[in-house]
Length: 416
Ligand code: NIG
Ligand code: FE
Image (cartoon, protein in one colour):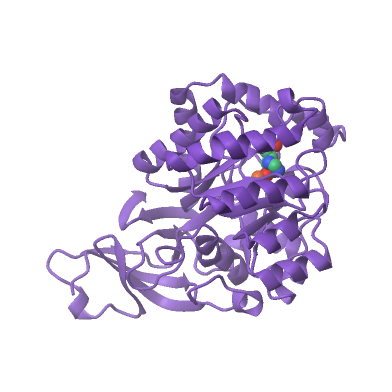
């Protein structure tokens, strides 16, 4: 069969091994590293990946051949935790953070997430759409081809719905593929300050069924944290969501370990996210329940903390790990997943192969897209990030610089 496109002469192709599930523990150190490689694309899908010159049987009269001498190819990067759609920005909190005021104290004073809620409630669909599209453009040039996007800056139905509709529209219009998560339980709205249980009940009774009926999200998430939602509230909401057919993720053990991880394990959430304060017991439970640990080192960095998640322990316990930006206006304003990957190496001593597996095949499974993206297996979408780098080590070593030069989504070159 002739290829539509042949990308040739890569000095290295990084291709995760797809085991039909996320890579766990030691498996995360394994990958196919193809020297002097080529990628054949047909109808937007991977036809073949190999070493040396492509066979003549792949080359028809209309096959386009593109030379990538000296470059590295990886499956398109997957940012599996973002708060993509929001109004305003919070650089005003930066000075407070520099003066040592904590994230949870800023939130307690009505700032933080709640200030973004005000800005998001007053933003129009069009305003949110344009702002989110611009953020996606920035992610794209860093090699990202799929993004998980959470709502959670409305905390009321109208705004949560608007955020999810913006993500849905962008999924149609933008080259990046979006996976939507409903996260109205992101903070306690002012009106429910003294009765957060009633807010959880409102989400269960009024919002979840509408999200389902309008098919606006695939996942449900909650911020389980001191001063936000308790483990009992998280369990109640996520159980109701699961009964309606939502897949589950949970913000757990970000600052304090208050039981979110147990909820994740008991309900078999696909992913528990943040985990900076994860305990040995929590790690054991997540490992046994096959909950993916989603690590967000940019948040530790941006909160000016030293508490990077204990990923080595997670890997030793046999857990699967992903890495993502947590892109949001407060605890991690960034569009650069490569910097997260570098923090994985610099701060958590992950190897480049572990890091690339985390943001490709494991991230694909964490957003329930393992069959279609995340590796170069024949028949998967031809989503490709091409680095101006000769091997997987280089983009981790040459840090804080965008080394992605070209990006393909479904076989179409969208960044040149
Ligand atoms: O993942 N942890 C909760 N939510 C976000 C922060 C959002 C914000 O500060 O606006 C997070 O860190
Ligand atoms: Fe988050």
